[in-house]
Image (cartoon, rainbow, N blue to C red; front, side):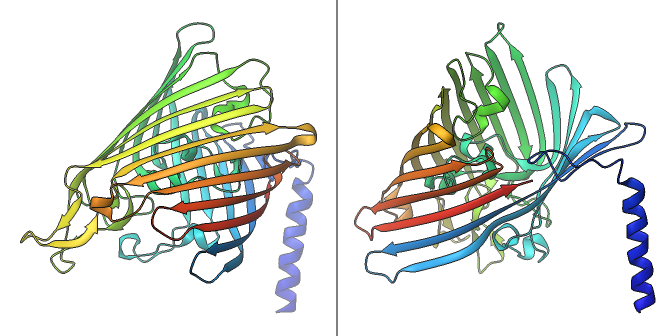
Length: 398
């Protein structure tokens, strides 16, 4: 056994020695490895990131809770195959929250795959995406969890997001002038979320998004990054609207939430669910402002058995608004504030209106790649128990 181990170690040493002059480690934040094929027909950047979080929560009339956790731990691979016009992205989740959700609909397998998508630039301004990735929904979800302004996303995102799914997407962008830019995206997806393997239930999900950038593109695509770390030297504005139609949806939150079973779990309740998103992002010299509005509607929000009796499941119809702003100060310290209100239809969902106020402080040591963030949130629940939450998070992104 010792001989085998020694031989294996020598093999790894020989391989690493032979390639040591070819594999130069990139700068911090640009991946662990940047590989290029000998004939330049393929590339691969390998990255990794981790989020460590401490959380305390106090609720009226309930016991206090505190927790330490690895919030996210992920591996990321991206590059191109054969030609730079054919790009790919693979992202794997390793933390408990990334892989949880195994069910018969995922073949009882952990949900390791976050993204697995190919992107083909088949004509100037056009890209065809196929695989599993984020749908063109609300801006806050389209911002990577590695690039958030505060510790986590808002209640609006957790309640209304359409997140990821499997399917096809067509992206197109063009300029009306030297600076005025328009981006469009259209998606056809399975309609039940990521890592579903049991085939399509109900109908398909159709999503369209239009984004307008009247003052030109942001530095380093800052319209999809929290805060103004680049300190835009001229005002930059992005306005977006998305509309999602999930035909014969079988979940309580479009392609998210729980399945709506009927007839003693023999079948699924199907209804059309529509979601509207309107959002904006503004940045100028360290000041940033982002706003989002969401509205979910359903043709029939009350799940019913074949005989017309109610099952108790309901589509989470209602509205939400999120507004947040931040100011980047000296030495890359940022102070940010956020207000979120969630108003689900109480007559249907039975849930009261929620208002959350968040104050955050961030220290960007190496941009979003190395940062420490903390925030405190006060949640007001109409005719319910109020909550106070404190979080501290450290992130490193190679």
